[in-house]
Length: 336
Image (cartoon, rainbow, N blue to C red; front, side, top):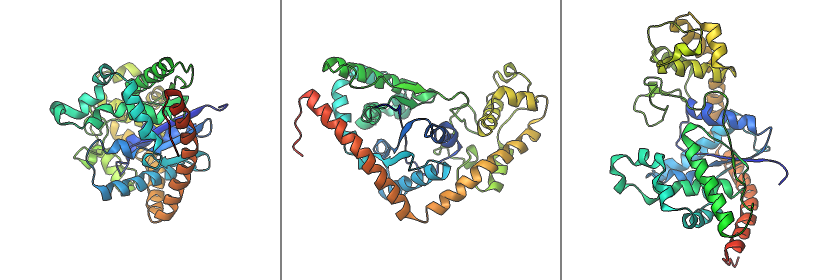
């Protein structure tokens, strides 16, 4: 494989928000012009928590619409849903047999998601990092865009690749994947409490900017976003222990493709009331056209289905070839 290959996935949670866009999808769009890109709607990951079947199907189409509306080009990138490529599950089982229980016990996200009642969590939730590793390595991806909260899972993917290559004396069969870490913001925080990540599951809709929000609602949400009484500092040190201020300034920097330092130079000494107007205008300029396109695309499920079917065919061509080679390496026979 001459060209470097990127893999990444997004869960079909429905109603994607600014955190999904700035933390992942915006970067996907940039990467498709530099790499061979495989972007997956990871519906198998979604069912680690119980889902309403009808809503899950709807969410898969909405995530596909959000990809396209944000600028992903199905002629440049492979866009598909995970369940359409059976080899993801096949390789995940193989990796369940390669990975060690101790590795799983160290995964901090399982502890966070399972909460206090981890004995009642699904087995799938505990071993889903192995499925994540399978997602990446099935396509022999060389690079994965990651945020701060996913670095541990990428390290696990690297460990699994090394152990498989060593156990089966198949040197360099799986590449040791490299992280692509955005220079600026990758983790967008809650507009009402910047100690929390922006999330669809948060009860208050005013905690996030949804990609389908109308401009009037965006203005209201930013106006009500939590800040402090101090003016905006001119230097980065002035944002220390000011989580809400840092969050809004980081969002502005990311949406305008600039740095936090440059934003501080521009707005240093000003009040947040003035800054929030500029932030609202920037969000409206970027987010509203995406939201309008999402709504338009969702009226044509046949078009979206065609994109997913075509993407699944392309993904299966790569996956079937690689899984057959993996079966041969470990001594499994597949009569089909």
